[in-house]
Length: 360
Image (tube, rainbow, N blue to C red; front, side, top):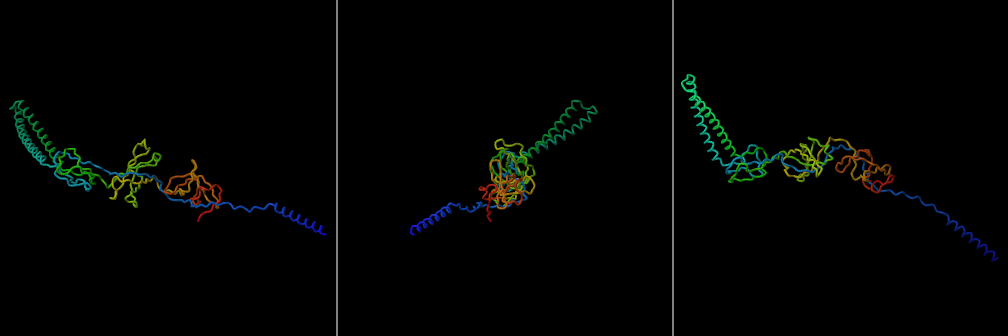
């Protein structure tokens, strides 16, 4: 009996072990793997009305700068302005001592009176001799002599008039006047100094209108025309904008820098000063509607530019063509339409067809 029971028990354990081994050898089904999603931020491509422009830097210069010199020799009797003084056109700036020039005028006036008297006497004598000559009461030589003296007297009178005019002109030049309205930039001589004709005394600049000089790249030359609007800003007045128009386009490109010199006229409200360094915005066309995206959304691969557009939480790669940059936005001329959601952060980890989790 014991032997039979032991045999049955052994069979039971063998069967149990076989079932256990068979169960352990069966393959378990793997749970479905969840696809990885990349976190991104998006922004809709927006259509904006923008005006094409070129940015540059430049310098303000006086519209006019005139060096005023003495035109006669002498001692400066007085100077009536200093550096920074505002002057009007025709205003007296300085006076050269005029005593010698007054005496010269008086002398030439006396010479003129003498010449007038001589001419009058000679003319009377000529009239008498002419009458006598017609009656053959004077010789030909006598008549020719008085005729010659009349011509000489007339020439002497003209010479005296010219000398008087010249002396008066010299006298007038002892008063030095401003040829324009503006500001005294430099004062180079003071009262009491001896000056000669040609000595520089003042530098006057015109400030109500300024010249803005700046350059543009060679590739932008075709966009530039006279009359285009210019806006400038200066560090001294960061909240203000000043307007002007292109006035001169220089005829040649600088061979070293490959840039073209441009000049614009800027009305001065009174706060701008020559020599200021300015930021320039030159508008090259009228306003137009364009599709724009943030520049942070652009990816560069060699000569290609691409963005990722999100549709149904899936990233789609788009090759785009760009136009002009407008601050932090870039014009898109092809590849993205208005309203499409463009990835602006997280796009460096994306790939075509990748799943995304859009941050809210």
